[in-house]
Image (cartoon, rainbow, N blue to C red; front, side, top):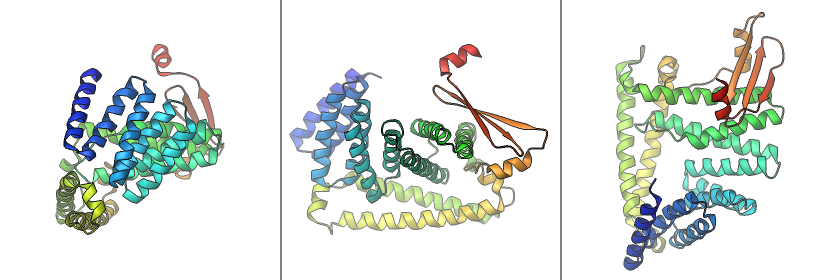
Length: 343
């Protein structure tokens, strides 16, 4: 929270980079410095800093950092209400993310495009597709993290995406779809809550042969080792040299490691799917598939009605579900502070 000291440290680092002609790190420092300016709402300076970083990454051929920077630019332009440039940067970031297989950049770019199409361009069908893609990517990332030791949460953007998707579906008359996304959001929140209090690795499946569990754990260990190798390799890569020599040894090594990671991930998912069939209760601790509306209605008797609430930053959505009637939805304009007072 000490942005003054942070700024001074970044500026000192920037001087060091220029003295040693370390352009790659200079781009990283500029990207981080932009967050300080954005925090102060000095969006003009934040954009100038990000554009300098973008120039460095493009000249060095570092497409991964280029995609990151374009995402940051899109967010900053959006804060400045420059919708045209935000849309342009988000589109470019999304295209690059497909090339670099950067799921996080892809997710962020889709979310930004959805927000623009939803709130600024009134292109609701496009916004729906953007939000859907962002949420699908997010849930894929989380599912993979559950197979790994990276039990982390990056839920701020995903929360907003679920909320905007629910609101959009209701606006478009897709009530059952809205309810499904509410359930997906709550399932994800429940898993996050579980992982704050339990360690899934310490829970033994009831009906799975011990060797299958050992096989999954062995694959997880190999994945962690290969990913560490890949991170160390990326940290040591000279992007200027790679641009000159496509057959650079580090490029070859990177491709070999990446291929091994993909093979191990596929093997892990195969074992995981087998375990899921044998012991769905255990696998549900890492991934929950919400009930479809048809199955949900089968569980409701004729004399009962399900009322479900979903709170966002400034609304409460209410879903009324009965066995045979169409789902009904209601909205209340209540922000978080008002809700606390009412409670």
